[in-house]
Length: 143
Image (cartoon, rainbow, N blue to C red; front, side, top):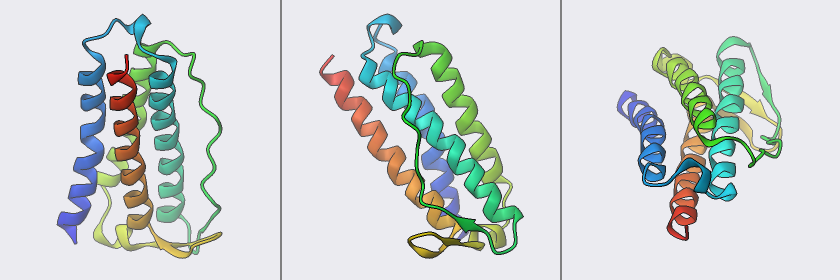
């Protein structure tokens, strides 16, 4: 099980550097608003998933509502946004690295899915992360 959790963490760790490598060939001012929006969505979801993970780890019998994200703003400056994304991802990964096996297996009652574990929440986040990276690659390819 520990290897599976390490793989999830490794997947999350690779995203910021991959996105930086993707946008590096472009002038920041020429990156499309769609790409900026996708990066903002990653940052925002990292923050929400961190909060949810903290709830699962710290509370007895926690309850999670359906994950709803506020609409991210796509009109942000790219480089400060990238720094915010790095910070949000770092905060999430820092928490995950320090979890025990028991913590990864902790569960919460979910509004629509019933009982979910912390590892389930992180797996869903990794899937979102992969989809966002794909969308960013696609939006930069049409640049």
